Length: 146
Image (cartoon, rainbow, N blue to C red; front, side, top):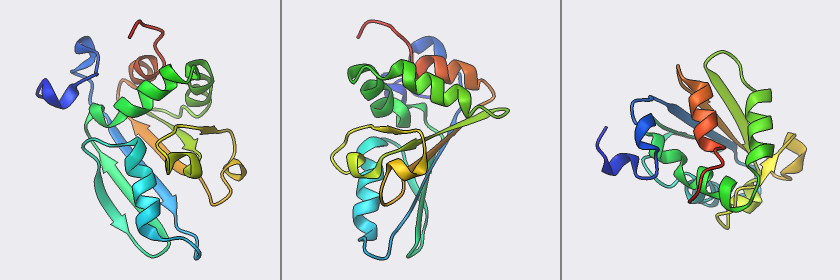
């Protein structure tokens, strides 16, 4: 991994491999491009469109830097402990997941959902896989300066 592709990623964690999958359904009343833009507003870097149908958008990345905006917003919005609790609650083997409010994402804001009904048109499902998933959760929710 080059240094530029891991900007923001703790240098001691650059060896950790991740796979991030993002999924959102598209309601009949929605423009699929707007749903895609909502996902890209949170997961800006190194995220490729994996599948797009009229009812579902799926994106993926194997770059830790794809989690940078999520990490920064968890820190800046002071929701690290809530995020940590949700990520640990959903921990299954080498993966975890979290639901994000899609309406908030359309304006680039991370808002966590405890249940799917907290996002009226359905949440963005973010699944993170890594053989070192606890280290990824620690990094996402770290209480460090900056």
